Structures are given as C-alpha cells and as structure tokens.
Length: 195
Ligand SMILES: Cc1cc2nc3c(=O)[nH]c(=O)nc-3n(C[C@H](O)[C@H](O)[C@H](O)COP(=O)(O)O)c2cc1C
Image (cartoon, rainbow, N blue to C red):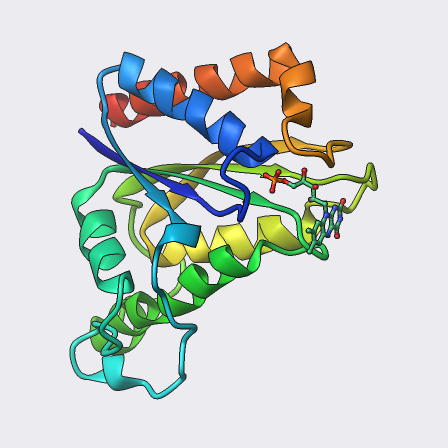
C-alpha cells in the first residue's frame, strides 16, 4: 500500500516536519510503503490560471507538480503537514493546492462528477501547528483541507492540530504529541486496510 507524506513547512526540522516524520514511522511500522515529498525542495510554479488542463485534466505547466500528480493517483493514503501562516497554510503548501485545480477540472468539468458524490478512494491525515492559542486558529486551514482533500479523492480521516509552538523543535517538548503522530500514521494505514 502506497502512502504519500507531504512536508509543507519551509523548515526541514520544524514542528510539523518532526510530527510528520513520526507519522511516517508509524505508517511504515503498519506496513505501508511511504513516499516523502518535501515541498521546499521542488520547483513548482503557482497556478497560472490558464486552464490548459481543460482538455485532459492534466496541468500543462511542466515542473515538479507532474510527479506529484502521478504519485497521488497511485497512492491510497495522504499525510500532509503545514504550519499555520496567517491563519492559512504555508505558501509552499498553497502552491501545491492551487496546482491541484487541474484535478478539480478533471473531476467536475471533464468527468462531470457532482461535488460530494461518490465514495473516497483514499484516506488522509492533516497535521498543523500554530504559535498562538486562539480558538479559531485552525478554522481556515480545516475548511481548505476539506475541499482540497476532496479534489484528491481523499477523505479527511483525521487532523492533528497543535497550538502554542513557535520555535523550531518546540514540539520535542511534547512527547505526547509525537506519540499521537506515530499512532495516527499507524492507525491511518489500519483504516485504509479495513476499507
Ligand atoms: C510567515 C509566518 C506566519 C505565521 N502566522 C501565524 C499565525 O497566523 N498564527 C499562529 O499562531 N502562528 C503563526 N506563525 C507561527 C508558526 O505557525 C509556528 O512557528 C509553527 O510552529 C511553525 O511550524 P513549522 O516549524 O512546522 O514551520 C507564523 C509564522 C510565520 C513564519
């Protein structure tokens, strides 16, 4: 079983990256083949809104998005981690999300599948960390993830959302969060196996 793990933070050793790495370990322990993608290492243009994808549902911009496109279609699970930047996702993550408009076009314009119709082919885990402690800290990203995951045919199976961590590695002071991430990776694979 293939699971894709997408690191959305610009920090390689940031809080979301540490958590996602633990989730990857859990998923591997449960038997999944996990491919890791670090968005900051990719060359990916933002969506140019030219709708070159209208004919085939494939984005026409030739860059590293093409590889992501193939990998997500081959996978049964997705784990995505992004820090909170201005109540939204990181710019790296947002670029990926917007490029997936090509998959939205394929689903809704080309294949004419109505929004919300059909069972999900994949299950996903979303991990996010913000510095502050506000009640609404994750409202924006959860809405974005709901609709982003739907485009990828991913059911938002679970979200791990942590407040009050700002500096690189702050999450290491919370072994419980690391355990939760490990467990979530493991449980995601178990949940995929059950379907
Ligand atoms: C550009 C930028 C914007 C941020 N915006 C927010 C914000 O709106 N709310 C918040 O609580 N933290 C905000 N933060 C803090 C990060 O969410 C926090 O440091 C988090 O731990 C970073 O995760 P990472 O180490 O995985 O990158 C921001 C940080 C940066 C660099």
